[in-house]
Image 1: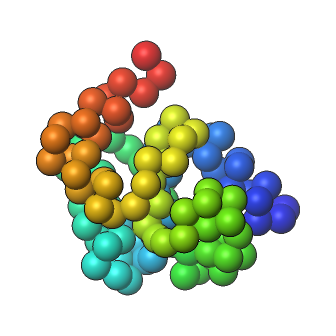
Image 2: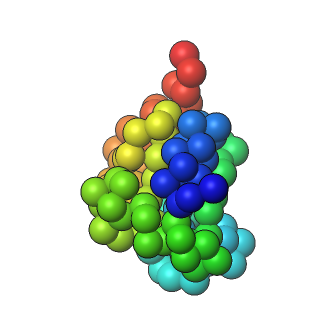
Length: 104
């Protein structure tokens, strides 16, 4: 499966997808660490992809999403954004509302 098809499939099949460097328990960058920590605090199950272990996705996703950096958070098949947006949305309560209203 090519990278774009893989990305589309991951986004279609999972309500919350975090493309990050490393894993939630062993992140490889501070921004990915913060994003995973915030999502964990939201107490919603999320799917993650370690882009360091998936170089095809690491290369294709920025073009597909028109977002150049990682992490990238997708909720309900829509790009939310990167770390600074995730932090701002969490601090305002907007992120919790977004993830708590999935499929409603």
